[in-house]
Length: 296
Ligand SMILES: C[S@@+](CC[C@H](N)C(=O)[O-])C[C@H]1O[C@@H](n2cnc3c(N)ncnc32)[C@H](O)[C@@H]1O
Image 1 (cartoon, rainbow, N blue to C red):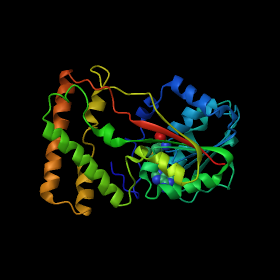
Image 2: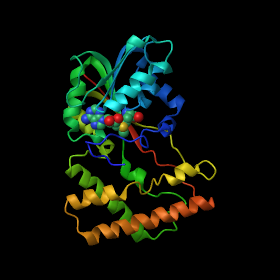
Image 3: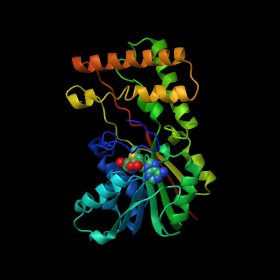
């Protein structure tokens, strides 16, 4: 899968594994903290197949008006067709599904109580502009709630293999991901570690009462829990061609790229082998932050 801004997110990245991202009682806690029951109008930007929208709706006003926006026409038509059936108690006219860009939202200024997104800003070349747009469409007193991850952490092999694997290889793996993420930023494809400093962007956007929390859900790799399908989904090394392509475009030497590939492959192979043997346990990579701020 590539994250080229011109190519849509594939089914692989928007699969049902996203339904495992949140613990229900933690969502209840967030709803309480942010008084979501007062939200009558919500917009979810970069909604994809609506996984995040689905998490929030049960906590809003019982008859909310919900707008899902995505840049990809395919996701918007998928939402139109399938999403309202998830909430039979809400009239279908309360839902709106629009194709649009977070940098130029097709929404009236000050029209929403809550503007939210999940793993969107990490893909956006100008997240400050995106936040400014989200701020424009939220009402005074309204909430902007962004969920973003810090993928460097999520990418690293930190489990039963950590003490066994060579330190140099593990350090090289970290360097490879860091370099790849830098290349993506340089190419204008977003920052996959944006969560690590997102509160600063909220401050710069002039948002107030900024709060940051961490999702308490982990999806552990445990023998018997990880399916064959997940084993085949090579999480440790999802798209080396994409990685190489971006590094080449941003001027990395072939020798350097080969070193990175070697480290990544060594760790990926060792992890997969241990998974197959049933000896691999990893508490799970889900370093995900919830950053919230209010427009005053
Ligand atoms: C990683 S997916 C997240 C989908 C959904 N929020 C979820 O959590 O399941 C990112 C989504 O943002 C959309 N997207 C990417 N750039 C966008 C932009 N500039 N404006 C609006 N949507 C965008 C993609 O099409 C994709 O559906």
